[in-house]
Picture 1 (cartoon, rainbow over the protein chains, first blue to last red):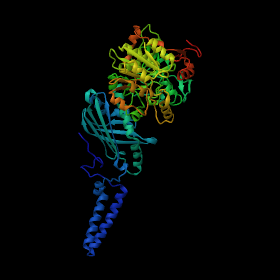
Picture 2 (cartoon, rainbow over the protein chains, first blue to last red):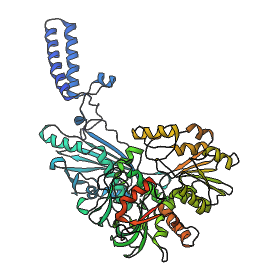
Picture 3 (cartoon, each protein chain N blue to C red):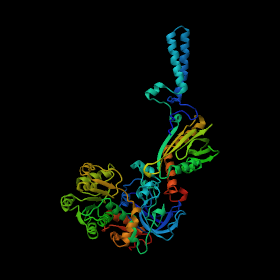
Length: 243
Length: 397
């Protein structure tokens, strides 16, 4: 099973064209495009047909590009002026765990286990057959909450969850479990995407999203491996207070 | 409790520090009864290993008595005398299950450091910098031992601490180095470095069936031990040309296997040595591979180079051409101690091999600062120092 989201927010439905124009530029495009189209209409009214038509078409294209965020020319040239926050923070990590895919799946599927391995999660509560409520801790003591639904659930193979409704930090994640060759256990692939929304609420969300770096997810996965393989997490601290 | 703590280059002190605690269910607390200074501790002492912090407790060769057990350990009891392997290994990851204990996936909480440095992590190690987990070491009165259910091995009645102490590191290290040589009857094994590891390697090579063993060093007392205890032919590299002598001793063939028990702080003479030493002090080259270069040149075609000596970074001018042209095999790595403790303990118990002959100095834990200096400078015929936490300062057991 493969997930082929590339840009575009979850829940917007259908295959979207990639957003590759930054917000400010999009606004400028819409305003400029509208102005150009208007001037094109005026030209046509003055019986200057060709220039008028050209302006109308060009204006329309700029307006469209601003509205949708997708520019064919940019795509052709490989240009992308969106910022990381607009694309969302995307993390993809791989790890091999010396347990069967079913065993690793079962630990993860019990979502209430996740705070044991993902340090930024304060709690995950199962609220229904496919729904859950998540609480995360960010830098500076900020807390964020959201509801999520289990979208795909193939035991021993794949879990896909997605935040729903008006989430403070929209996100989606998949975990795939594949048998590793030669009796080495399970190859785990984790893909998580966070989309910090704009506005003041978005700042806290953006901070949290940035804090959940690839390095952190990697350390989280190591904790998963240690717990499943050895029953505990490794520490070299001197005292329990320091743990 | 008292512990030997690192405070910078050439600066170790015995400090009062808090006692260790049980943190995880599979932990044990061991009261140390005997502990050694290892040649690799000198790399820490000489400031060559990064990520040391002021106050870190040193030591990875220690035996003792179990005084406390976590709730998850059922195969041991308080009061058991135990040998503690220097790598910390979980026993559950693929590597541990393959008996590659020193490559444990799980025991290094700072694994990201070695992953950056080398591409992947090894097992955590007692008292060997934060690269290897930052675990408190065994040159102390008490030590917290993780994964004690797989780590600790009971010492049978009738064997003294001095007889078994080297099962923690150097005897398995020498043995693994010799085993890696795939020794066959008729083989000549040459060992660079007649320090404790080299001596253990020579003994092991003989035990594994080598016909001839050759020891190379510059300190007469070390060469003597090799000659007397390991039946070795000896070469003093300050008096003889090593390459030529090895060539002559082996009828022009070269040794079938060569063991580098010297590592990154190799000492040499001449322009080559000056090059490496200058570059190392300017931090342009981490390791000084004079011994390793000699090994590669001297080894017979199709032979094996076995490297138990510690290297930490990069070396210049590695004779890759010679390695390729002569079809050599290079094997190296940290010792998978857990695999060897039982069988080697057997050899000691039956009297087949004795390792305590290498001990030249016995002192109190509190005399560690003087001990490190002595060992580093190789003065007073020093070959191996062991320390007893219960001895009073200045006493010699």
